[in-house]
Length: 481
Picture 1 (spheres, rainbow, N blue to C red):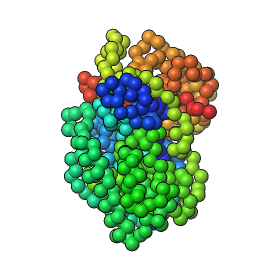
Picture 2: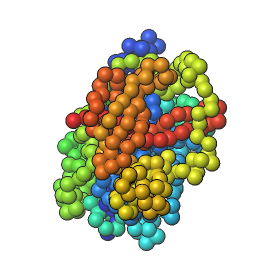
Picture 3: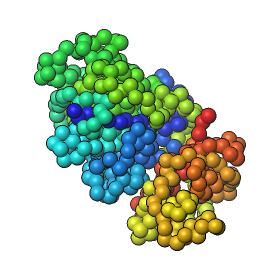
Picture 4: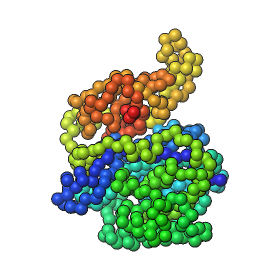
């Protein structure tokens, strides 16, 4: 049996109400949709969100068993530097794994899932992690600006401990010129909206689902949940009617809560469905992009095992309202802001030779632990820091990224430049030992207290635009209790 053995999601904490967008640019585009969308923080991108989803997924799976990482996105941070390798290093996977990237279409997430399935089914590997993430840019006042949301999903495709058996699939492929973006462009383009809705979403998804039902002799009424990717609420309901599904079978699309997250959207809906599923439920899922990929799964008894990670409902319940549209567009560098001398210093980027040598410490947050006395330390040390030990070169690797911490002290710096001022940083004491200072994120001035619990989050530390370097490191995020 080959299928999904573990799963996790990540939805950024900020929510931007669409009426806030309308109040800022409604003079140009008076049509304002209802609800809100999930917005990645200024230090988040498709890579960092993929790591967050992967960390959540690994709470229910042993990382040493992962033999490959497939990453899918339409919003890569690099055109030439493999994001999958960055994600694998941040997740502290062994280097002897296969890393592959899928791009070019919002259907690439399900395509990556099917490729992982084929790899495991062929016996090439036993467990492949699939990370799917998007943080798409949209031109101000466009319909996409209101529709697009941000998020990520991580799935383990394996041959044991399967919670959802992948039973079959069906695909259709078309070069439909509905949406496109050239490699040198910041924003995408779209053809006439009605043409895109009627000729692609309504037809491709219906054709793909019908093809799967015919291929395997299935009836639409057999499925407990039906998932498909369509960012138009009215057309989403119309597809359900076309395929003959009952309203109770259709999985919530969450368009009015988090928006259309792009590549991860159908898989994010799948994770939400798995979190509520019972053993024996059959689930149909259809993606969209240059055609449609449809597959169906059947949950096993393993679905009853309680999950350790944060679930989709937790993310939806913990959103923080972003009330300033100008802050949102400045976070995306759509609206350039004056940084001042402090923010324009260019000699702060990490020398790439050092990044290579210390990649585990910088990207994986891996320190050392004394074999003699058990004291952990970050950064890694040759000499034990415990005064009554002092062991030399008796260390083993110790991962801090999945450890809970407590804020020992902190500073709110109103002089240092930050695109989301003030700059906040502090010293974190980790459970089990170890102490280091980190930037704090997803918090605001006056919200912190000494002793409060924090968790680690992989974020963009800086972007060195003249050299095209995204610098990543770990930051501390206050836990909401």
